[in-house]
Amino acid sequence: MDEKSLQRLIEDLAPLNNRYRLAVRNREPAYVAINYLWDIGDVLVRNGVGKVHPVARKVQECSYITASLLSYAFRVRRYFRDRRTIKRDFGKVPNFSVFRDAFPLLENPRYNLSRREKSELVRLLNSGAGVEEISTRLTELKRAKRPRRDTRTRPFEELQPFASLFRERLRDMEALMESAPRKQLHAFRESFTPDFLLLWARLAMCFADEAFAPPSAPITGEGNQERWVELVQAMHDVACRGKHTRNRVRKLVKPMEFLRMAEFVDILRDKDKLEKYVKERSSRRKRD
Image (tube, rainbow, N blue to C red):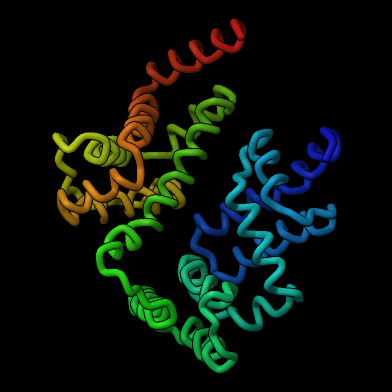
């Protein structure tokens, strides 16, 4: 894909990306966010994208649209051939996170759900049951369909989703801190409360260095961006499982990766530090 085609693609994707993020942040019904994902995937399909990952990486390098989002949207578009079936089949799902947890069971052939099992799963999602109850039943179904046989590797397998989430968010943070304009970085900083940033930095440090204990304060999502609240909540949950769990995490994610996240968050905590960082970044670019 040439540079002009890539730029046109980004221009088509950007408004949809913003609407999707806003729908998730405002906790709109799941089908609203899924519709925007479908639209994003449809833009890729209409632009002749066959293998999404190379294109997604190029888009991420030139914009603030993440490769992981584009890959996920592409999967959603392939799964739902008709956009109208989204509201029909998932119109009563209250929370997008519930759908996100269930989607692998519906889409991934490794789970090998029968038609009856898929129908029962869709009914569960639309049943009006609480999010915690649905999440528990989804976890049970995943374990039943793909049982873990080697108990020695099970603790690491259970931590793999967290490791993947952290690495994805670290890549997003690196892209933002390296490429975002000054005003956008300051707006990003101001989208978090000071207490939330402090908690985030302390959590990153407790994974980076075993000398640091995890904070016991609860996570407050109000006033903070949901996608980053999801990460910090996951960090808090895993960190509070104990020292042995944090040691296992360090075998999946290098301590230096956690330290890099901690350094970025520390910069965001202080307006003057962020301003200094932006100036130093500009000087580096001029030298390069």
